[in-house]
Structures are given as structure tokens and as C-alpha cells.
Image (cartoon, rainbow, N blue to C red):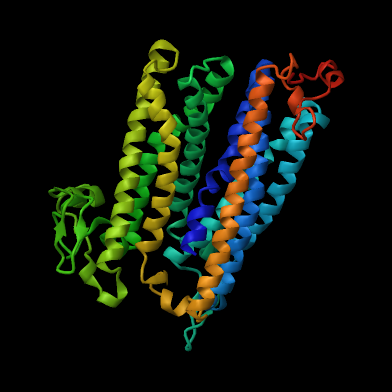
Length: 462
């Protein structure tokens, strides 16, 4: 489950956010009659479709794993929090239809009609994210039910089960995070091109729009990250203690940057900042922070799990802080000189920002799941009660099959992207033998509109 989630989650930012970034570029192209912007939007839509196809494979494996690996959880709690998965499924099918309409609409629909039919795409993606985050938020702060004498959930209140205390902080932190991740990844591709000397308008615009979106959202995400950490402090104090390596409940608690927790409560390595943890949690040094020893050892993460959650959280915060500095650098140059920063170091940092964001996505998931141990449903069901009783040999066979499937899926994804990139480069260079730009894309579903459509006054993109 860890392997499949860690792999699938790399595709999530593009499934949720790439449609919005693509439509933003599409709107710019139509509004300003910008053929370069329309060309970028058209090509991004092709990437969006390929990514969605790969997501079908990885997501389907996950859906099977929920039933096969966690029968205890799904059998007991499925009626309470299963609505989130139902919402995600409906959003998934809706998004598949809308992507098909949008992709094939480049050649068959009038420009503005095509744009308006694509506009629901980001909404469908956000609806899918709504369902998944609602399910995860319920696992962190389960609500909307009562337990009968045998311990089974009854009197389910769907509204309370969906809108749990952690839902709002988790959802907005997730949405903003995936949008800025997709923005930095897309911009990073063009940053590499700019570093290689391709300073044409195609690369400048391909970099500027997604990077601007990501840069605007970066400080917003930093504030949202602080907000969700404070929500964890109030709603899941033991998880907060794990992520901050707090051993005993106390005031004036120091903050540790990295470091390792030991079984006696000591922390080795890292940087200790006196009183900072209490200040961050409650805005004053006298804030009392719950420690891991406030609950029995069987009800809290082990020292290894706490250290893993702590490192994941600190990596996430460190990368976020560096991205804020990068966004400020970009904003200062744009406001002062109305141009991109001239330093090659800026482009190098921008090229790495996307990979750094994907790392933070992984770290955020690790913090959420590992910090909640040993509970799969917080304070209601342990992982040991939820997991399958299948023999280890069968699990290893299943794991091997999943690894092969995922390697093939991601290998195919990268192969298709590289082939499309190569075709686009040849088209932009006018190959073969003086062919017009876009000719090499004419036989693809997202290819340019026929000349007759363009000439009709509808604002074609070629």
C-alpha cells in the first residue's frame, strides 16, 4: 500500500491542477489572439490526457488494495466514510468524459465553445480531490456515528462524516499544494529549455504563466501549512507530539530541526531552538504541548515512526521556506524590471523546484499516515485490526506484480512524453524539409484546426 500510494500520489498534482493551468493558458490565447499560448495549451492538454490514462491504471490498483489489504477497516467503517470514495469515482468518470471532449475539441469545435466546454474540467478534478481528502480527514478525526454495544458504528450522519474537523485544513492545504506543485513542475521543463539557450517566446511563456501561478500560491501554502499544523495540535495532539519529537507534556517546549528520538525521550542531532515549539503551537512560550508519554506506548507511534514523521515534516517545511524565497526573488524582479530574473541560478533553482515540490507531496503523506500510528482510524481502530490476514508469501507475490505493473505504467508514461516532446521540437524547427510548424501534429487528436475553421473568424490557434 505504501508503494502504490507513494507512486500514485506523484500523478495527483497533474490530475488535479494541470487542467486549470492549461485552461488559463487557453484563455490567454483566445483573449489576446496569442497563437503561442494556444499552442502551449493544446500540447499541455495532450500531456493531461496521457497522465490521466496512467492514473487510471495506478488508481485502479489502489481501489483493489483497499478491499484486499484492509478488509477489517472497509467491512466495519465503509458505511460511514465510504461516500468520499463514491464522490471520487463519480468525479473520475466525469473527468474522463470532459478530457475526451476537450482533447478532441481542438479540431472539431469553435474556439470559444471549446474553451467553455473545458471549463468544468478543473471543477471535476477538485470534486475528486474533495472525495479522497474527505475520506482521509475522517480517518484522522472520525465523526458522524455512534457505537452500539458490540462496538459497531450506527446512526451514521453523512454530513458530519464528510465535514470532519480536519477536512477544511486538509482540503485547502492539499488543493493549493497540488496546484503550485504542478505549476513548478511545468515551469521547470521550460526553465531547462531556457538554460539551454532556447529563449524564444514559446519557452518564456511556457515558463512564466505556470511559475507565476505557483509563486503567488507559495506564501499562501506556507500559511495554510501553519494552519493545518495548529489543527493537528488541537485535534490530534499525540500526532503533533510525534512530528515535533515532544516526549513529555510541558510548557516552554523547544523546537527540533531534524534530529532523532530515542526510547528515553532524548533527541540526538538536529538543531534545538528553545521554546519555539510552544510559541508556534499557541503563540506564547507558556503554551502546554502534549507529549508522547501522555498515552500508553501501545497507543502512540514508536520512536522510529516518530522520527520518520518528524523528518518528513521538517523536509516539507524546509522546502516550503526555500520556495517562498524563490517566489519572492521572482516577484521582486517582475515588479521591478517587468522581466524574468537574469541570473542562471534562478533558472537552476526553478528547474529543481518541481522535483522539490513532489518530494514535499510525499513527505506530507508520510507525515499524515505515519504520525497517526498505530491507528488507521484515529483512536477507534488499529492498523493490526484492519489489515488482511493473508499469508506473507501471497502478499509478496501481490507486491511483485504491482511493482511490475507500475514500472511498466510509468515507463510507458515517460516514453510517450519523450516521443511527444521530440515531435513537438521537430515541428517547431520546421522539419522535415521546411514543413510548417504543427504539420507533424496534424494526425493527432489534439492537432491544429483545419485552415477552413481558422479562416471563419472564430479565432483559430494556427
